[in-house]
Image (tube, rainbow, N blue to C red; front, side, top):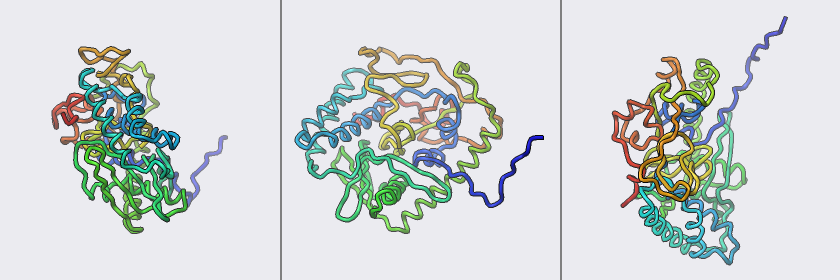
Length: 362
């Protein structure tokens, strides 16, 4: 007879492993959360967004600039890095991509002209992590500076929306990064900064130990809810079928919207004013096409198509009604910018569809 291993009383629960992007996805729209983190294979996304291509290209160039030898840290080098790494996905055509390439070149060269090339950051695109009794949270910081005896979290923003001090104060991601950086470096880190490249404005917020603790407590609360939902999903949904599944198994679709955070594993698609929020820089590669099924705008093989490139589509996983209800959508204006819009009737009804380049400040 096989022995049944029973859970021991008082055993600690498994830590919920997450990024701030995952927590924000749960907070913003549970359907988007499910499509992004639970359904496997993940449902097909829509076409890449041009404003995300701009943001990812700028972030990559700035990260590369700090990795150059001191004597090469010039505005010209920043412009060259931007040009060599330009991501073309999401633009209407080559002419529009070229215009924005020029703008982005001016953006990065103008910004680095304000920096001291000898003032090496503590980290660039630095992954930091921390844990509590509830969560193991990690994320990647654009730049981590040392100012005197303290560390400062720096986050680049390229969206057209002007920023306010409240954006820095209320950011769960920036607060978590500050806590994680302080823990890993054993150095106080309470100040977070948003550097808005289009205006040159720097928005700063200095946290207290209490405000950082509140943000961390909020992260734990979100994680507790999400972890319970994850468990119910795993119990109710059978092992995922193969990738050959026909499209349209169900209809639903998630979002990344204005002011969105970074997502795990890649810079997430965000809507106007948002910064790509946790992981690598972009879901697209220079000159590459969208990774999943659906339409793709941009240069493919060096040629610009006159119409979107259609790709095989993967639909959401078939789930019981109670699971669909547990991961209900949160329809609103943000749905215009949702990567999973095609799969979500509620999102389609809540907001009009946007073209991939509509968030650009033309």
